[in-house]
Image (cartoon, rainbow over all chains, first blue to last red):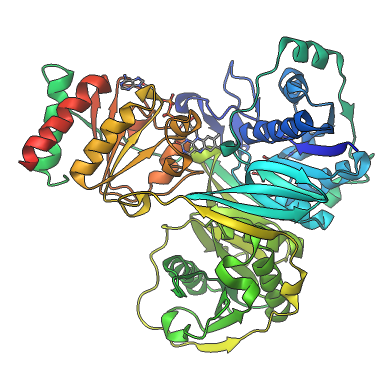
Length: 265
Length: 330
Ligand SMILES: Cc1cc2nc3c(=O)[nH]c(=O)nc-3n(C[C@H](O)[C@H](O)[C@H](O)COP(=O)(O)OP(=O)(O)OC[C@H]3O[C@@H](n4cnc5c(N)ncnc54)[C@H](O)[C@@H]3O)c2cc1C
Ligand SMILES: Nc1ncnc2c1ncn2[C@@H]1O[C@H](COP(=O)(O)O)[C@@H](O)[C@H]1O
């Protein structure tokens, strides 16, 4: 019997945006989109898609992508489809810009209710915009499911999912009964690149869209518990002492002497 | 509702240093006007050696002992999450503080969502807003490129996880009371099971303890140059670290990774070679005292935080640096 796997993905500003192009509009507490740098699917979420596709490769599975957000760029959001996922479900509403995780969890849980049931719900380790690393944990609590974080391998077996959970030094093997929520980390290994065939197939697929109303939610349900008062770029003054020499090797030598002079080595 | 509940951690049978840092954060909130006292909760299978005197800054220490709570509990941290939720129900704190450790980063949000409230993760400051009587927190966002100040609205429990190494632990001897809280019923509902833990023992100096770190990035171009870094680290009695790009490429194991999603380190000298200094990498270096960079790009972000730098090709700079270090060592 085919497993049904939901993967939660988020559209975020490209975290590789050079620091010089990273700007904040303090009057509205928002990031100013860097010109010419499109948003991306959150990196860890592509690892989660990869984990789902590996399960699909190994057996039989249906992979459904779920995303809540606003200003979706369709070329970006279709990437998981072009990697091989089966369907894309979007909830798009300007209100999602200012909701907190409790709200996001409500939206995703309602999306799962509409499109489920699922055997596995995967997400990324953390979203690279607000770096909170908490939405999937909230989803598990809301749905009454077990949760395991930081997977570097996800293997469903009879009624359980066996997870290798990355530690800073090594890993743990954890088993949880299915259905379960699992977050995936980059230790899983690189996410596959879309093939040309995948891109063509994805271009023909239309996302399913769900409105707040269809999800049975109102703006009042999503009033944030935690709200951003101020967003700013901390000031930092460079105080670097550049060591120069006759050539690069000489500079290396002088660097060692300078560090010794200060008793640092 | 009243007071602050601090979720401490046990390390090698004693209250960990990071718990003292949480007590310092709680102390700051108390000084700013939070009333109701500070309770420190600790969990483990046998806590008979834990005494209030070990917890300066806590008005009371609450021990939760159960076999299911051994070593932070079974996989997925089910048991400690259930234990803290049960304790919360009993004492109804206004504020719950966790450390943003492997444990707290998961348990904090799980407890918060169980209560149906938000959590602020990885905070570097907490303050009481005197007007609202609620907590405001400061946290790095966008990989550390920006800082956000957040307010807790409404009247729910305020759950905060605090970045380790930011607050100085409270010093001295504790004079609080001690009590035991029974969680045997709560922890019986554990679902995820820890099958085994495989620890990769690193040889030599641990990165977290190293006084000198030689760290390599994508600019090294492959795994072989890491041998040169190791040679230099051995000369200086240090350890080798890496950027995520080098780990993801498979040049070194992920246990070498330093940064936001890797290790936090606090060496006296951090020599980075071929690392651009992305904010997510720098997030692991807030405790590093002297950052030294070798990078061929004079615009590299690493030079903004470095104290010393050489602009050049590491293949030319590093061998001369290492040779000089060897000569100096005699
Ligand atoms: C949510 C999130 C979490 C992350 N967590 C982490 C983390 O914990 N740790 C981490 O490190 N990264 C992390 N990253 C990744 C981070 O954003 C960067 O992509 C990464 O740190 C870049 O690694 P690098 O500096 O080695 O590579 P690059 O950015 O490619 O830099 C390579 C540098 O080498 C220099 N170079 C090239 N050749 C030479 C030469 N011959 N001599 C001298 N210099 C040379 C170049 O000038 C360049 O500056 C995270 C990213 C995200 C989105
Ligand atoms: N708006 C969203 N839509 C879909 N998935 C999300 C959303 N926000 C967070 N997630 C998922 O939750 C993970 C952790 O996000 P966060 O808790 O925001 O750091 C992400 O990697 C996604 O898998």
